[in-house]
Image 1 (cartoon, each protein chain N blue to C red):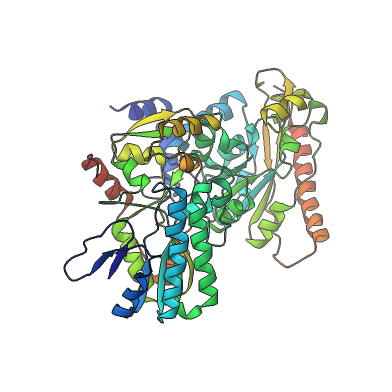
Image 2: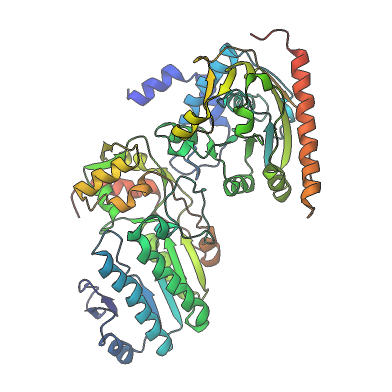
Length: 271
Length: 283
């Protein structure tokens, strides 16, 4: 038995393997797509995500079936927790749903492709450089894409600012309107408590070329995570002013705020 | 009729072949003698051949001479073979780069300036002399039997260098498919710039594995380290100025060409790599 087959038999549960095989992702003859997604690597990625999702963060997801079974979708959520655990958990919730599972894509910071091994691994499990051209091409390819319009403003915020939505970029709304993509809002509760940061060491971040350098405990805490997916939102593609687009962005932001409040009310304990 | 500035290429008894510098005065004599209908300009000297100056003379000034003569002698179809290298390899490249994307490579490496200049020149002639019907083709990695470019040499070798931790997505087109693409392009007089690539992709290190090449990792960070190593080693098969093409993906979108000319590659990646695996001797 080759090493790859041996590792796969040990690390990838058979039902997950079959589940992924049932999802017909458009890929080339060698299992890759243009963005580097690989149909075999995703199985290892989702096996690890399964452990995190079910055992470590004990995620409770509601409304994941609001995400349409096909067509271009932007899954828009609040970003938190210093590292993109929220993206992994949202992705697993959609990939593991029983009815019409999909393997979503996530837009990642421009810094990641320059990191050896990690950059390639992220591409192979479906993450893509956060570039508007990439996002547009993937929507044209009928992909479901996880988007955090707060960007590093959200993920890098301090614990004292938890669950306060930061400024949303409007790029996702432009893309949704142009490509007739459905927006599904999601409120993430729990990831703020995974790596609570009390300060951002800006000089260190600048030296290392990182977007932020949090002063936090060097562990990821096993906070219980609640994901609340809201009903799909549709926006027409008429040519409208930036002010009107900002109003639409605010509409999505308010819905995410409502879903966060819902998650906070449902939460009985932090861990 | 065939002309190559580097060597006389034998193409059979029926096809006259010359070894001639395009900038040489006697080159015009061929236009007078043969009364060409069209010109297919394949003779771009690749970025790992000759010196920068000689490449510039051959690729840029030679092309200018060729296009001037084409205009003077009423040529009605010109195909110019360019390369996907003109887009440049960088971390921020999106995938499926289309023909309208900027050509960034000139700003990234002085060794690729002539490739971009050649394209700019062809573009100027494309708009200035529409009757030439110029089509510029930007193919992905051309590979297959008898191909002697950087990528083909790497796939042929027993051991190929890789940048540790980087395995960018790549596209490969078989030399025979590329020949078919050129013939299709020649037969239709559509002008413009076209990427030529199949709808299939593979990571560089996976391609090496399928070709039976052992991978030799070269330290990849900080970025100056691999450049320093490659500059010292002066490996023609893994040149320093192309190092970023082995680090970041340059995935092009070939759909415009496929739709315009009805092109469909016939040789799958597995067949291409099988050839290299079964022929592990230097070409």
